[in-house]
Image (cartoon, rainbow, N blue to C red; front, side, top):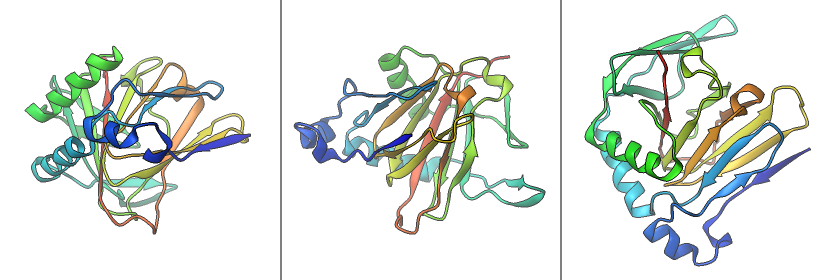
Length: 219
């Protein structure tokens, strides 16, 4: 059992107008067992998203950490940057990242998300996928610092990429979602307990994508 959602703008009524102006109210609820996720395809207009992408790509302090997988250490296949409102560090997959204060543009994005989805965040992990060979392996955002049933708000800017989901206990439950430029994917509830997700490599992708995953890190 599984399904794929390949969301192209021509599937929506008045889609061109939505993409130009942005439409935060347009949302798609992903209906799968143990999954609490909502997709907003036009959270930012294409023009807004492109402006944000260029500014963040140029002004963000990017880094590339080493990661160890199955006993082998290699450079992480993407660039990252961690920011928070308070002084803290964030650890995942054996990597500990020190924080950088929120910039005005990150505060602006955070405020827009919070105003529309009624969640609060104090940190954001940025990922820069330089091309289709940059990727994110299978994982859940279930670090202890995030607490029980964390809310993760994921913004996509730039090149659209395929987002894969698979259930941890039922191998037949899986899904694919095309994350569009200017979109927001909200995962919350018990999603991280039961599901893993990834951004796979793709030879069809040439452009760059910036992904911002906002989260609430608890003391």
